[in-house]
Length: 350
Image 1 (cartoon, rainbow, N blue to C red):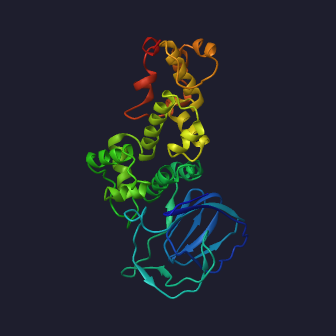
Image 2 (image 1 turned 120 degrees about the vertical axis):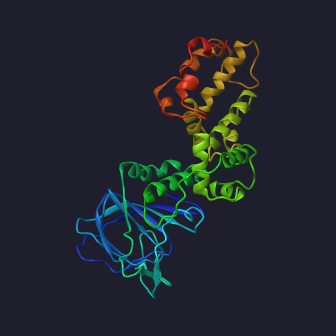
Image 3 (image 1 turned 180 degrees about the horizontal axis):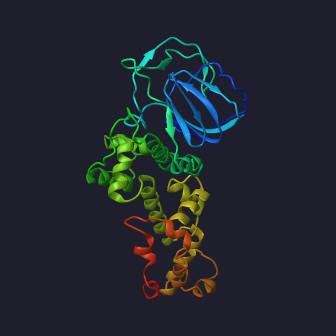
């Protein structure tokens, strides 16, 4: 489904059908497994549980696990974290005991022997922390929606994975504390870096490193003080630049999309529609009509002049008040309050 330097998201389908336990498996990296369909039994770290869409599980590096499929196959979302960049201050850290193992790979892992694999640890004779992750409806929807962020792996997808992990680990024993947002100055420094297009801030992890904090703390602080996610704010800045370019006469939308860092024109159109309720082409016609109404010609072509002059700009603006926009939260507050709540007389710019 997705892959970045910091994580890998996979859809894993298992067709096994057996009531007995499988051979031991392991993972070389931390994983969270969330069930989309079906159910199966898991034995991990001295605990047994049934995994289904309401209960997922964590898989620590090298932890031995076995599976049983008494009800047939299943389909799961598997997120494997490659390195600690995203999870350093989130992942639970139970004690572990290192043992030698040469077992098969876990879900989504290439086959090969494990070195220094671990078994679920005990501290003072107590059982290891359960790997179970209670999955409420929000968490289930979050992992089902991960594919929608694949166009923006640098920011949007990374924040979606962080949000998912935060939902999964909330209140979990052994998880590092860090739920309190930081000071507003951190959010302001992040905004400045995004607006200034700092070359070091190529993705969420790089931006956090530039600001000497963790991605999860940055994301939490930014959302608290700015009122939106880092990725949403970055899209807001890119849409603003697109509006300026289109108003200045830019007609090559594909080239404009790439220059603004979108993956392609379709991605550009989806973001523009999410922010404005209109595609780039519709916005271009709207801005051209505005120029015509003011008695000046637009810099670039935007359709027949007669057609442009026959479309008063307030009619297009009035069309922004559609149901799809009411879920959007533009920078600073709800769309209804900031824009859609205005009277028609305020929208007549002719």
